[in-house]
Length: 281
Ligand code: HEM
Image 1 (cartoon, rainbow, N blue to C red):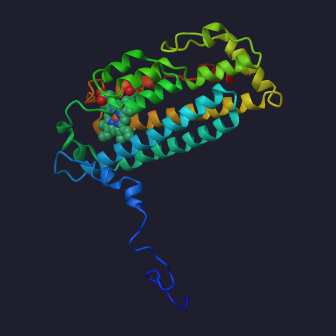
Image 2 (cartoon, protein in one colour):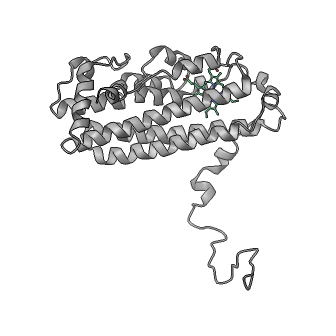
Image 3 (tube, rainbow, N blue to C red):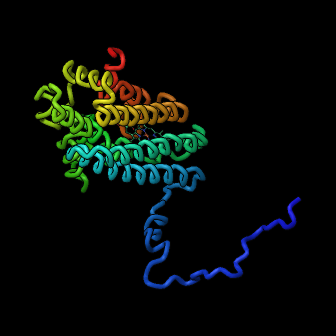
């Protein structure tokens, strides 16, 4: 046994700022008054606070994902891939965190959830503007999905994300800039429309993968993008399975078929040629 077991920290000799001066304190800097007063359960059910917190934490992580993704897109646009890789790597870690959070949600049983589900009305993650913007910036350009944000203060922001080039659009422009024969239908198009895969783009990525030393930055970019998409799909899959576990095949509060709708999204591809090239290498 050690000589002495401590059960509380010895504060003697510490110069603690018991009353922080200068206007800033931990709580004030982080806006904790607002953050911690933003949980307003509408029932007395024990599990509702967890349900609110997990969604709010998810939205905070989405906020950071969007910040990093905007930074990464700007860097790729200017050909500055180094900092973009750092930002993409950070997004991948956030995605891990988001996927991890399903295990907390899964501690809520169907019986627990059904006690307050009816009170949620028509509200659903389907109406998450930040999630939709993330999808658009990754390249899932489904204009119809913006409709749910009409008449909300964030509608213009959602439309801007729809109308701007996605991270993949910028990557393809970079390929063209590096001398690859990329069709104008990929580099100069209506960005609000879904991207259509082409053989020419797959061939370009194939050359990159077959000459990694020569095209190291593009090769690294390709792998970083695959990493993002892999984690995005993992999140989608875990969400779908957690939803099935909790509500079975009931319709969603957002009006969709529920699990059936979430399963459809599993087939989506942001970066189609980066997946098909793996078979043709
Ligand atoms: C009990 C927990 C949950 C259930 C039963 C559930 C259920 C559903 C369902 C059924 C949908 C399809 C749309 C609709 O509502 O009709 C959906 C969409 C969505 N949910 Fe959840 N969800 C849960 C938790 C969460 C959490 C914790 C998050 C985020 C942190 C989240 C984010 C989303 C997003 C972003 C969508 C839109 C997906 C898309 O359009 O591809 N959900 N959810």
